Every structure is written in structure tokens, then in C-alpha cells.
Length: 519
Image 1: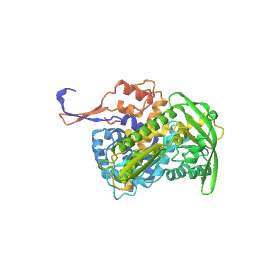
Image 2 (image 1 turned 135 degrees about the horizontal axis):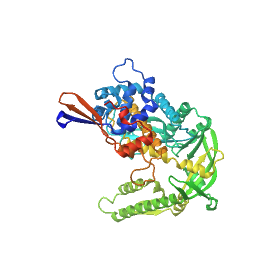
Image 3 (image 1 turned 45 degrees about the vertical axis):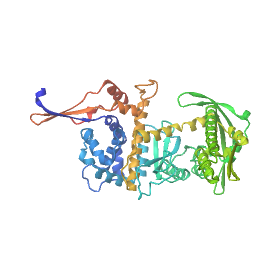
Image 4 (image 1 turned 180 degrees about the vertical axis):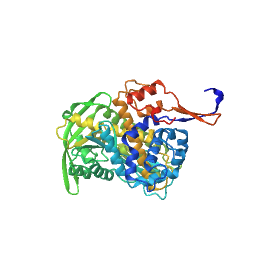
């Protein structure tokens, strides 16, 4: 073709679709969605197609619904999937969200089971963790978005709470549930367990949760369901006293498998831990873990907090009886404000504000006995478990693998970017959160496939397994180029993949784009 024959040239980006489409095809997401949310009249794309488009958008270039059409114009969506930009306008996508809302649980369960079957994922140890996603804006008419305990440190922002179940083997998210933004963790945990039991119908499963998730009601429910658990115990005053009373010589060394290498500096002692709820009691095996690293961090954190409080209290003392500092109530308010900022350590201080002959006095002191008692807890946390026959090392290692659930939550918030969501209908908000969870499942599955194939990072530490984020960066740009010729005919061709892209697709055993891109 001579250059003179070309009137104009345009390009669309296939990009990460080359990684996402093969996985979507393997699990049949659109088929599953269409089974539960069929269209009354077949016009244009199906709901399943619309959901897949939103998942691809979340993973490549997250945008609000009203901009997905623009994204589709820039990406080779029509060439790779046969879906034109005009078919994914915000009204069409909103109708798809409405359609899947009533079937979220069924769709997710089928997708999860399909993934487990297709990729031989057999969960035996499952972490259940909770997070919150905050929203900008008032959302005055929303019942879902509420002010509540903010894990994002945004107490003034309305939020939705999420519970996520993650397989401890390879970190695969299995299920999620969205909750109103003010629902407490224990209530989310009980509802989550009911759904896990209904969806997986496991003969044996070990659930792992942190101290905010495992209380008496949850522990007894797990036993009633025939499930075992490993959970961190909430450090009530009674539990603190029991833990502090264990002599140092009772702690024996552990060899605990770390995230990347064998970690030393762990010791453990055992005691009985009792849960109770609604007149029932459950006695479990308790493991008091002492981590040297955590002990150092706890001590440093306390020393810094105490030093900060003391410096602020000394500032108050230096200002006594000057200008505003003559009123006892004003001074008490300032003291309380200081202690509130370091609430975990406020109980270590005793303060007294007095007044004599028109002059204000202020004294403070540190409770040495309490300080010594707190130091006895440095580096210690308590795990309770119903698992029989496991060593203390194995229990601790299982609990420490919680980092997998925590990393998936980070992927959800950072790599998939749930926000911004310009929606004000609660059903659509929940449905779009579900889309983000589906995207997280695809994100994780790509990573699992890559790691099983032995792919390593292409930059940084070459010994670390590759991440989906790195893979998507490698596939940031693959152009589908179209020439318009003088005779008004069009010629389309696919840009040659670079050697790294070719090698990755071969190693992943994914089809080459030319096999499905319309040219």
C-alpha cells in the first residue's frame, strides 16, 4: 500500500482486553448473568454483555457510567467483542445494573463455583474480612450510604460496608456482601456465615477472622454449622489480665512461616478461651502469641504517645492563668481534647485541675502500675480455635495468611478504583459495587494463572511473582489501526505485539488477539 492511497488513519486500543477477554470467556460470565437476568426482548446487547463491558472498564480505565461510552470509543471493544460504543451508553448500563441487582447472590455464587471448578481452586481455609468504601457527596436519600466506623479514616463521609470471603490458598475472592454503612462487624459476620453455608455447602471449612469479626455469637454459629474457626480474640480487660498473668517461662519458641521467608522471634503459650452468647458457652483452645517485632512496635508506639501527651500537658501548665487560661472548665476541655487524640493511652494519665484564690492549678501524673501492666501485653495477641490436631505454628501461620484478604481489599480500593460512583439509586450502588467485586475476581484470577505459569516480575525484584497490575501495565497499549483509502474502503490491522507481550500470552496459554479481533 502506497502512502498516497491513505486518506486518514485512526487507532483504537486493545490494551488489557487481551488479558481480560480470555478469562471472561473461560468462566462464561455473560452466560451466567443472562441465565439469571434474561432480557424480556432481545434488542442490542444482553445484560451479560453489558456486565462484561463494565468489568473490562473497571480493570482497564475505571470511569463513571456516563463515560463508559467514551471509553468504548477509545478501546477496540467493537473489534474484539462485537459491541459498539453506542450500545454501552449510561442508560443501557443502568438497566443492566437494575436487572442484576435482585440476582447478585445467585450470579456471584455461580461465577465463584465456575472459577473453582475451572481452575481447580478448593477452599479449605477461608478468611472473612470487612472494609468500607466512602463516597463523596450528600446522598441524603440513600438508605445504604451511612456514616459509620470508617476504615478509610473518613468519619465525615458516608460509606457502604463490605464483607469479603477470600480463599487462603491463592487469595481468590469467593463471595462478598454489601451492608449499610453503619452496620457493625459482628452483625456482618453472622450474615456472612449464613451465606457461605448456603452457597458453598461445605462438609468441612475453616473460617479465619480478626477480633472485630469473631465474638460469642459468631463462634457458636460456626460450631452449629459444623465449621471450624481461627479467630483473634477481642482484648477485654479480663482477657488482658489473663494474658498478662502468664509467666514468661510458659512461652515457648515457634517457627512461623512468614509471608516471604521463615520468620523467627515468635513464642506462644496456651490457655483456655471461653465464648458465650444467649446463655450458651463454648470453650476453645487459646494460643497467646508473643511477637518480638510487635513487642518493639507496641513499646515504641506507647512511648511516643506518652511523650506527646506529656509535652502537650506541659504546654498547658506553661499557659496557666494567662488570658484564656484562667477558667478551669476551659483547661479541662483542652486536657480532654489532648487525651482524646491518644485515646488508647489516656487511661495511663491522671490529671487534676483546681482553683485557689482566683488562680488555677493543674497537675498530672502517670500511673506506673498501669504502665507496667500494659508493658506485660507488648507484642501479645490471643488466637482462639476449634481446629483439632494442629500445632501452634500451623494455627499462627493460618491466621497470618490474612494478608491475602487484606491485599485483595487494597486491590479493590487502589487498582480497581471503586470510586467515583455518580449514582444515587441504592440498588444501582449495590450492583455497581458487585461489578467491582467481579472485576476483583478477574484481577485475582489473572494473577493466579500467571503465577501458576511461573511468570516473575519484569522489573524490581525479578524473583517476586508478577502481579496483575504489572501485567496490565505491560499491555497498556496494543493498537488496532484503521486506514481509510481514497476509494473510501477501509483497511484494518493489528499492531505487532512486542516480545514481552507475545511471551506472556504464550506462557499464559491465552489466544493471540488476531484470532478474535475483527480485521
